[in-house]
Image (cartoon, protein in one colour):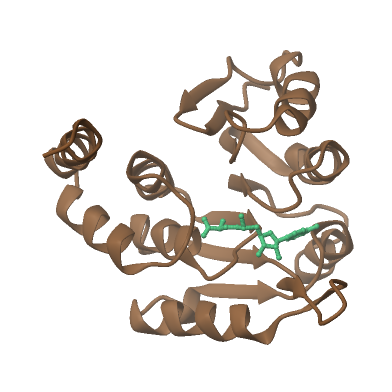
Length: 212
Ligand SMILES: C[S@@+](CC[C@H](N)C(=O)[O-])C[C@H]1O[C@@H](n2cnc3c(N)ncnc32)[C@H](O)[C@@H]1O
């Protein structure tokens, strides 16, 4: 066995030994997406006890299913315009991602708890107020951001959505470990704010708890 596959086996075994480990590994292997095994475990286990979850960037539903399976009473609002590339390289809606996401949600029996908003996160933000009470928008227990990874994209998502997270709730974002654009936007808005606890890491995910 190569050093790489030995490491991979050990990492999977570590997740498997933790709470709901066998189910997490099974879901991780079944679903199409870009999460590491520890990141899949983080999402599943962090969802526990969180009723109101917002996901920005769903792709084919991997993180969405993990969040929904982590808390059987959760409702997930999944926001993704499902962008793909057109024939001339332009950004267009790609129905194949929607089809694959719907298939993943149905196969895992969570479709009735997921509301997919097929829009960019900034355009979906007013929908949140309309869907709930406009004067007193519903608080979010867990906000998971994995959409537009540019500096501006992450900054807009944090500016638009993070204030909705309740005290004691969690904000988490993917690719903090890989992308300077994500790190800069996160550190300026979450790392430097006394509303949020210290930034913690699970591989490329950054997360923090709302303190006040
Ligand atoms: C890396 S994928 C998400 C992967 C998914 N979270 C998972 O773990 O399986 C990024 C997704 O973000 C979506 N996206 C890009 N810009 C967005 C935006 N402004 N708002 C919401 N989603 C966006 C893309 O369509 C793409 O499906």
